Length: 381
Ligand code: AMP
Image (tube, rainbow, N blue to C red; front, top):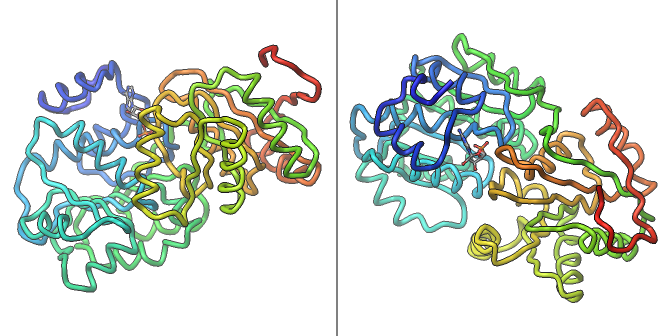
């Protein structure tokens, strides 16, 4: 199928061609025509599947008709993290380049005054994290009575982060007659309940079993002794063996993020830390430098790296085995994007056995073991 068959107008097709996309991804193929018909959607899809364009493209098409009124945004996109919100807004800029849509971004740590001016003039698209939106609503800065399209993105992440009560509060402030699009990598019972309560006759679209890591990601489990120093040694050895272009190294704990980043720096690696306790300006700057290839290795916690979309990331390293199997799938989904091969390595200590077993149950197959003790510089196949 080609983009021409989805019902998008010529301006969008031009923007999509400018972005270099040749054909729609499976979620785009399924979601775009249904969204354009005005249907509610549940999209079970991970990041990396092209789901953002799957909802932003039809939204731009629909919002192209009509105009926003002062303080009354016409559509609302809820995102669990600031980084994801910023990424979605970048998508609107790229795909909406031939449309005159206005947009505001309400996320923590970003000055409100500029966004407030945009809101006062009227915006077509409001992208927000739930807490920040409620905050501004309570101050009387926004009216939600004209929202015609609501997107709840990464709903399972919202759940993990405790945002569902805020999301429900927001939904109750919106007009009943609206189109609702919900995306989630997994469908836990609470998310199913949310969909049943707030969506009208939704069409469910699933692009891959949610627990299936992308096929083009090579996965290896590296047994290591359970001490921090030996784990760091093992990681350095892997970094030497592998031809790393750029990588995220995940830690389970924030304090380990900083310690590991400092240790890697001391050993001459080009790296930076990213975790939720850092000032927003520093987080944004670090992300930009990573995206621009000025930093090769990013040591991060799950929350900080949620949904990070860095094109062509060659590797993901799990310095710690994640404690939930879903997080494993999310983490390794950072690599192997858009058809490229990605490589992921997970350091596993004896204490991680039960977490590894849960991951292997979820993904439905054992992860190949890789012994690196005593290995020198021959590449890992
Ligand atoms: P997402 O799943 O929305 O995070 O998108 C993952 C990546 O795929 C982003 O870098 C997009 O720019 C890219 N992408 C989205 N749609 C397409 C497409 N149809 N063809 C090629 N790349 C795409």
